Length: 71
Length: 232
Image 1: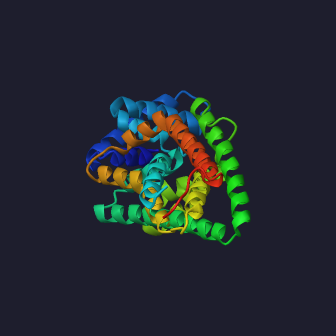
Image 2 (image 1 turned 30 degrees about the vertical axis):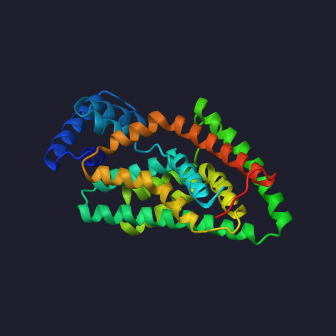
Image 3 (image 1 turned 90 degrees about the vertical axis):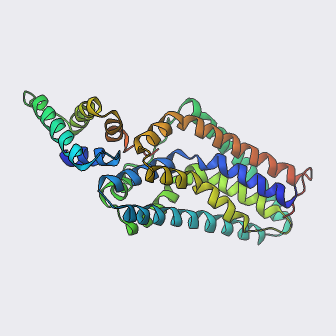
C-alpha cells in the first residue's frame, strides 16, 4: 500500500520527499483505522487509503482510486 | 466528394473517433505508471513513443488491409458488402448513443483483460511492455473502434481511384489526443486531471462516436445510391 500511495504521489509530479511523507502518513492512518477491525477486504483498505490520501492531496487521491478504470 | 472533401471528411471523422474513453484511460494509466516508477524524461519518452507508434501502425495496417480487401471484391459484391457495413455501422452507432444514457450497462471488459492492462500500465512499465500494451489496447478498443474503422475504410475503398494513404491521416488523427496529452504531461499537466476529464466526459465521447458512425454509414448509403460520387 505504501508503494502504491508513493507512486500515486509521484504520478502527479510531487517530489520524492513529499511523496514519502504522504505515503507514511496515509499508511499510519490506515493502520490506526484497521487496528480495531477483525476483518477487512482489500477494497475497504483501498477506499480508506484513497480517502485519507484525497484529504492530503485530492489529485493523488483521485488517481489512486480511479487508475484502474479502463472503460 | 472531391479528394480534398474526402480528406476533410476523414479528418473530421477521425477527430470524433479519437476521443475513445478506453484508449484515453489506458494511455493515462501508462503515463501515470511511468511517472510513478520515477522514470526519467528519456524513459518516459521511450514508453509513450513505443505505445503510440504501435497503436498508429496497427490502426493504419488494419485500415489499409480492409481497403485492399474490399477492393479485391467485384463491383456488385463490394456494393453488397458496403451496404451490409452501412447497416452494421448504423446499428453500432445507436448502441454507442445508448452509452450516453446508460454507460457501461450490459457489457464490460473481461477481468483477464483488465488484469493484463493493469499489469502492463502500472506493474511493468518499459518500452517493450508498452509495445505489447499497444497491441492489447488495439484489441481492447475493437468493440468501440472496430465498426467505425470498418465504415471509414469502406468510404475510402469506394472512392475511385482509392487511396490507402488516407489511412495514414486517419491513424494520425486517432492518436493525436494521446500525443497532446503526452506533451502536456511532460509540461506538468497532472494525469489525474486527464482521468477526471475522461471520467466526466466518457458518455459524451461515446455519443459523439455513435453519431459519427451513423453519419459515416449514411454517407456510405449516399455513395451506393449514386447521390454522392467519391474521387481521391
